[in-house]
Amino acid sequence: MSDDAPPLLEVRDLVVRFDVVTPGGPWGRRRTLTAVDGVHVSVRRGETLGLVGESGCGKSTTGRAVLQLEKPSAGEVIFDGRPIHEWWVQRWGGWRWDHRLRDLRRRMQMIFQDPSASLDPRMTVEAILAEPLRNFALASGSERRGRVQRLLEIVGLDPRFIRRYPHQFSGGQRQRIGIARALALEPDLIVADEPTSGLDVSIQAQIVNLLGRLQQELGLTMMFIAHDLATVRHVSDRIAVMHLGRIVELAAADRIVTAPLHPYTQALVAAVPVPDPIRERARPRLVLAGEPPSPLDPPAGCPFHTRCPVREERCRRESPPLRTVAAGHEVACHLVD
Ligand code: SF4
Image 1: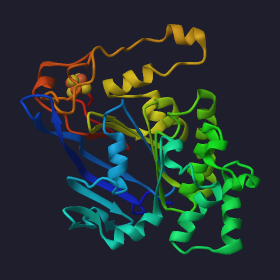
Image 2 (image 1 turned 60 degrees about the vertical axis):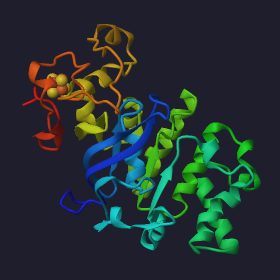
Image 3 (image 1 turned 120 degrees about the horizontal axis):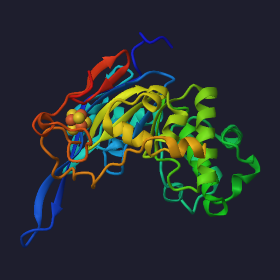
Image 4 (image 1 turned 90 degrees about the vertical axis):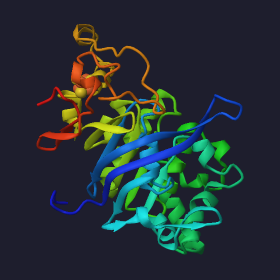
């Protein structure tokens, strides 16, 4: 796919706010939490975009808003040229998907963090994987069973396991079933939300390798969300680094890891262990002091200034916009030329 081709997904100035009640007064205090604050990013066909950042930085909410599992408060989500953020209707006292969004569900799928919670324990693997095929009337009878068996093969599970229940599998195998279910409808876009976080370290590598292989073999377009930069780097073509609801750096995965420009990205890179103990001991440390600020009460100026080791006076007053500093490399920092 050429770089000039229109992206499959365009996210423009996406904002997601939640009403929350915090302690205070007899009934608590109603406040607004801005989880995603002006995210602007695109994903080309066949590309994997990594979204990385600490817990609570808004990356999962961004993924959910892309799939319209969360209604955006502002901004646009353009999927295959169509403004899907507009495909909501107000009904029964709340916002619901309109019929176009329901149909589009087939083309956009999610891999969830916790495979145990996302798989119905009362259903066999066959029933779990056949359900989307039946819902969209894509196959029936022996053809449907054949497709289910093929899906199990694709994710590295024995097709003879078709009659087993989720509890009869290990955590890694359950995540493979979750991946097979996401693939069942042959979607154009998959959002993988922390797909390895709930797994043992040894199993994490297997799932990351599986996703990398599927991305190559099936030409998947994917948004891969994780808090661990080492994992994200392994599968991503480009990486967007998020902090407090905003993207602070976006570049090719290799560039993010070898030449990070934003101090926050530099801290994330410094936290990734190097396998060589001599190099690991010799390399400079960049440890961020203090806790991340609350999205309920973000600091004025640059949202990172309370922990930034190189902040200047103007960082307390002016919020740096995300700007292009080199071809394909965007950074939000006053100090980066
Ligand atoms: Fe640090 Fe200032 Fe850059 Fe923000 S704008 S990352 S506070 S140097």
